[in-house]
Image (cartoon, rainbow, N blue to C red; front, side, top):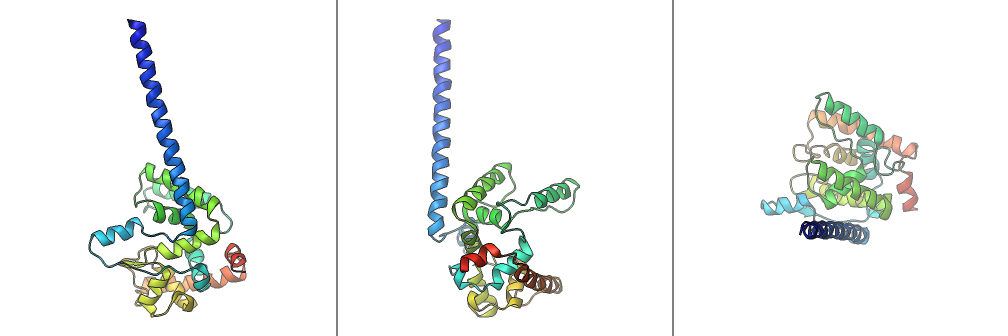
Length: 240
């Protein structure tokens, strides 16, 4: 009798183990399929867009290809957010280390996220700082780096990033703040858009506060550096 119950217990645990492994394998394949689809299809909605719509806020977005976005715009976000974008594999180890030390010392929380990580989070996940979400973010970051490549990552990022209340993507933002399309942005305008990214709800690109205006001027200088030093080489090569 004891042996019978022991065998039954082993059988139950094996079935549970197999069910867990099968579920994980299915989720793994589904996540890869999801990323492959978004390689070719515009991201239809993000968590933040869904939140805005649920709260009754009008959502404005206009999906445009990277070739229809002025080159100063990706250069501005590289200068402001991730100068190593073309060189790293999705993760800036030095920035992550600095953020970890800063947070551990009790300073203001820093993320240390690359544009690739931000794109993975915005396209596939929800806001938050839990270990589960950060783990999924790392997984999706690796997938988009492998399956999408840098130009597609930048294209998706510039089309889904939040840039104001209910405003998503640089084309919608360019039209809202400056009444021009993304392809007509000047260096100063692109710098202002990049300057509001850390706090898109509180900051206004058309009428920036003193601190935002100073930050935008610094970004504008960085745009020149990105161009002259070829920091955006992975994007300029794709444009031909």
